[in-house]
Length: 156
Image: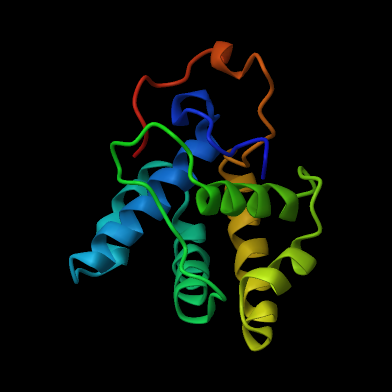
């Protein structure tokens, strides 16, 4: 998580940016009483992530309904990664073997016990879809700002 926390969104790879944009867009849609799937489906299609849409929606719903604390997400325009955004990126990355955190143990600290299994499965499915799309977030290094080919603005 600390690899992502308080970093500029522009320093993240495409997978990290995709997750930040998706979580923020989900929160914005729910806050505006709109269907979050409708708000993000087009971007999921554009990034070959259709297989990840349902696991993502389930993950966010589980965090929302069963979280042990209120998750905080930044506004779409914010260029810094919040704590909970960093946690989600780290969990998805770790689900594919790219992280240094035990996913299931971390989930025990984030959600009610009854939701851990479903949330773990959702994150694993999302990670698999991101791998198939070539979007698995990877740990960022000090030279992450020099990654070639990154767009200047956050996703979609």
